[in-house]
Image (tube, helix red, strand yellow):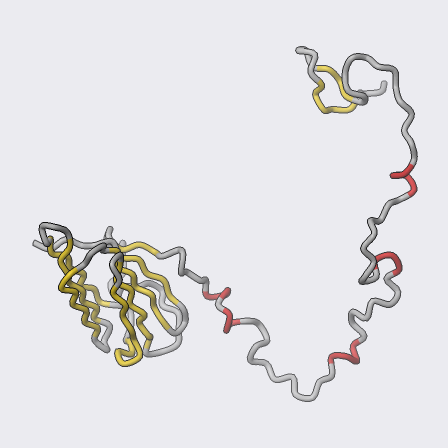
Length: 189
């Protein structure tokens, strides 16, 4: 009987990343069908233990544009989706996914964080001239104008505070029962 190797996955709108973590895999067989059927088999270890993954992906894929890479640590498969859209899940059947299947958080990108999905990227502004909006020329900002690097210091910050008589604890803080300052200011009644 075959075992299931750990499988990680992540997606973009146009592709899937499927990583099978199986060090020193031998006799690797990968099969991907346009309907979304994904099959993997290999042996690993000194005992040549057989491993197998047979899953039905959520939707159709483009077999000709998909690529695989077999390394000494893992098998990575870049699967191109037939349609550029986000899938609700990896597998066709709903419910709880198999225990060997995990999300690859190192490769995961949320749908709204994908670079191509920026707001306004597909908007046509025609001949609209944004420079006439007078936004951000820096005039009228005074001390906050661009290029002013010195720290802003108010007059009250620069006044000297007279020293109080030493009471054996930090100025302006109450001692706790153990004699340590509590960090709370002294209450004036």
